Amino acid sequence: MLDHLLDKTDEADDAILEVDGLKKYFPIRRGVFSRPKGHVKAVDGVSFKVRRGETLGIVGESGCGKSTVARLIIRLLQATEGSVRLDGRDIHAQSPAELRAMRRDVQMIFQDPYSSLNPRWTIGRTLAEPMKIYGIGSKREQIERVASLLDNVGLNPSYASRYPHEFSGGQRQRIGIARALVLNPKVIIADEPVSALDISIQAQVINLMQDLQEQYRLTYLFISHDLSVVEHISDRVAVMYLGRVVELASKEQLFRSPKHPYTGALMSAAPEVRGAEGAKRERIILRGDVPSPANPPSGCTFHTRCPSCMDICKTVAPALKEVEPGQRVSCHLY
Image 1 (cartoon, rainbow, N blue to C red):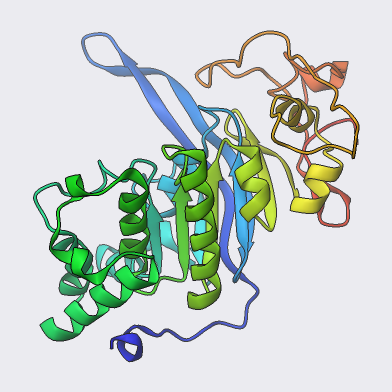
Image 2 (spheres, rainbow, N blue to C red):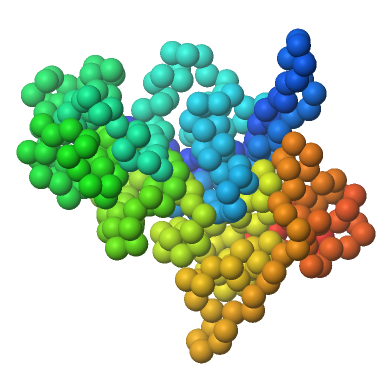
């Protein structure tokens, strides 16, 4: 087997992934000369740390910047400002050769398992390709590892000779998980990995991911808009709104006592999230629409919809600060 070739030395530092002041502005170009007329602030100053072996969930409405953060972390996009550090090394300061080596440590599970697989390649070839690229193991060792990974994700090793169209959606996502595990990464970024699956299959895939996390000592960054899924799998949760983190807390703190008005409104719109025993959760209706990231409001970006808006909210952007041990909130109420 290839475990002896793939093992990496663990670092003593508790935080394996550190995101600091991360920004991504996309230029808006108009006119004959395509000169920038403004910017879409997709990610606007996001900071958080992910501890070794934990699952940090990132949740928010569509368009809040969750997937852009994921692409910045693995450097599919270049950051406008800020840093992403993996074991103390800034990913956005790496040379192409250094980045290539570092990419073994961070892998991704995509939302659509079918479009992320090459329809002309067998599953065996898809899983073996990363090992070929990095020159890991002999051909026989690669075949053995592919068979082992398929077995670990609950698929028959003989399926290696089949093509993506021969599998169901849930099976294809299991293949996507196996591909993410091929190089023994330290961190796996899961971008809406179960949103395209049936409810019953979602539970199976989430339970599989938790079992594999323990088996391979993985760290997850789990992105989703589904609060019930995030509550089930996460240790801590970051809530995003319009490109910023507005609340960051442990799962227990967040779902028991959300502090930010947006977090409370988000939870009130999700019937799957449990409230107190026998009690009905108060429904919070937000007024207005989500502002455009090309022209976000001044001050707190949530103030145009916030039921607790004060004058200071309209002009001063609140800092993300600790209001309870382990619970950080970006709001002038605290």
